[in-house]
Length: 230
Image 1 (cartoon, rainbow, N blue to C red):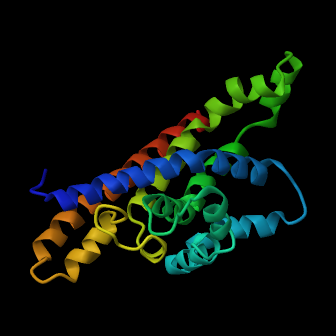
Image 2 (tube, rainbow, N blue to C red):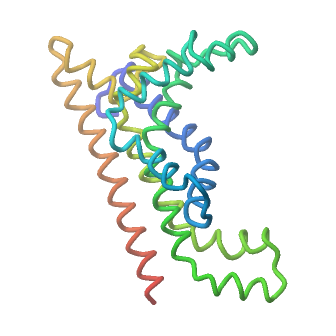
C-alpha cells in the first residue's frame, strides 16, 4: 500500500484504532451534551458551553499536560486507577484515544446540537398528542431528524482525531507500534535523516483522509439542509 513499511502501516492502523474507539466511547457523551445545551436552561450553561469548546482554542499540548496531571501514574485520578484496578493510561494507545477524543469533542457536539435546535417543537407536541412517550419520540422522531448531524459530527471527529498531534505526543508519547499514530509517524520522519520520502508518503495519505472527510461532511450538510428547506 503506497510502498509503506510495516512501521508506517502500523501507525496508520493505530490511527484508525484510536479514532474509532475514541468515537464509540465519545458518542454518548457528545449526544447528551448536545441535547443538554440545546434543550435545557440551567445555571452555568454558558460556562459548560465554553468548557466544551475549550479544546478548539487552547494549544493541544495544554490538553495533554492536563491529562498527565489527571490521568498520569501519579495524577489525581490516574493514581487511583492504578492502585485499585491496575490500569495505566499514560503512554498507551488508550491514552492516545482519550487525548484525540478530547481535542475532537467540540466538533462532534456542535453539529448534533445544531440538529437538535432545528427540530420544530410542534412535531414533538403532535407526537405527544398521538400518545407517544419520551422514548418513542426520541427513537422514531428525534433520532431520524438529528441523524445527519450525528453523521456530520462523527466525520468531523474522525478527521480531527486522525490529525491529532500535540495532546497525543504529550500524554501518550511517540512509541513505535504502541502509541505512534499517523501524525507522530510524520513528525518522526521529518526529524529522521533521509526521511523526506517517508514524510511525503504519509502526508499525502493524511491530506487525502482529511480532505475526503471534509468533502463528505460538506455534502451531507448541504443534503440535510436542502431537505429541511423543502
